[in-house]
Length: 256
Image (cartoon, rainbow, N blue to C red; front, side, top):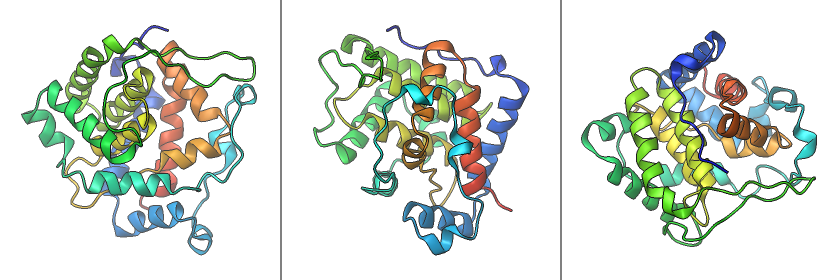
């Protein structure tokens, strides 16, 4: 499959642009009570979950979900988002806003490799062979871009995130995450690294880390989240993935 086109924010519709504004604001304004809400949700603390609007399968629905084979295990098993948050907090990266002003694309690649070391079983080396996705119910699968395209593509992703950050941190974050998943640079840990980068970009100048736990959301969605990623990657349709990120952000990070 070809590498995805990196979108222009001007191509988004008015509703998606508004949703991006809300996500950026949620991350900037989230206080201690919102951060505690996220922590309790990650820990699946039922007493805490009873006190706010839950994230439901209806929030995450996509009509094509039926064509994706999804595991039925508890999405909270393994504490994936908790471990991602720990990896980000211990990475000493500083803010992306500062990083983008002082660093170059090669430094961004080093950041990805460093994060990969923290979260993956197989180290931080870039993959050196062709890989593809798990097949769906009809045995269709995605073949990820050739390994020889990874370094140049990482540079393009960093440039895109840097150039669009002032316009919309949320736009930069979502596109970077989706684009990193599209190239699958590592043998292991690609989703974790992409989600950490998403949250890193959105934390802007925060003193304490706000983290949106997208792994559990994806597992709850019965395949819908994956379809939304594919829509953005191969059809340049960003509306659904932006919608889901905004819905989750509104329920976990937005001040009421």
